[in-house]
Length: 203
Image (cartoon, rainbow, N blue to C red):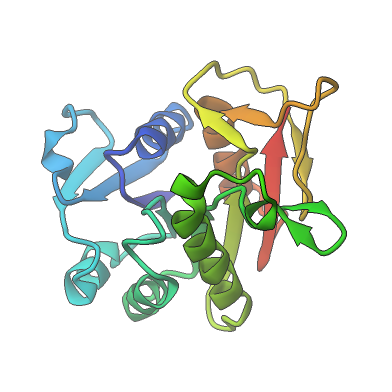
């Protein structure tokens, strides 16, 4: 497939590139400084400011799938959706946040007293993004939320999949490596199982 990755130079974006190449896909890496990425066979770098809707739409033309890894506070849902629509790309997958996952009936993680204030604005923007996607009828979208702790680590291929609730292990730790997250995202691209849904992954 031809996969466009918005925010390709970030920590998640680079791991998504690795996983896509491992599986033989063609990648267009989109970021303000995409040309700073190492040259690799199968990757085309496009220096694009994603807030420039016309430029972003032009960069997305001809792709099968778009993955957005952009920070929610910097690029809202309508900017992404509009660019994907105008480019005629049928599928949009979004690197979500854990803040909108439920930790109790009717209670999302971002609304708990323990949620760090430093991450609250981004988490709330992520919830808004998800809600906007839920009203989208033209594009086949998927929003993949990581677990609460989301850091570089190992590609183990051993994780659980959930839907709306935060996943935790036996020690009540909620975590997923960026490598395993990328694996789950590419699995969803190759074998769609969450059309117009949010899901989550964790150990």
